Image (tube, rainbow, N blue to C red; front, side, top):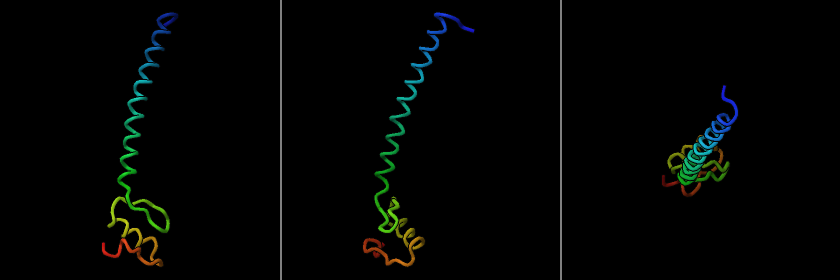
Length: 77
């Protein structure tokens, strides 16, 4: 077991390494979240769910909200 000065140096190195890893992961995760939000371009008018494309939106609307009339943006899809 390390004692004294060696222990302090080991703790500082470990802490620096953890901070570096955290910074790398933080930017990566945020970039992924932003890209995912941009990909979800369509929002359901009934439940406010987000969909990536009109085909998926139309399927969602027909399956989840059959009592409602299809929105005008989905009629030609």
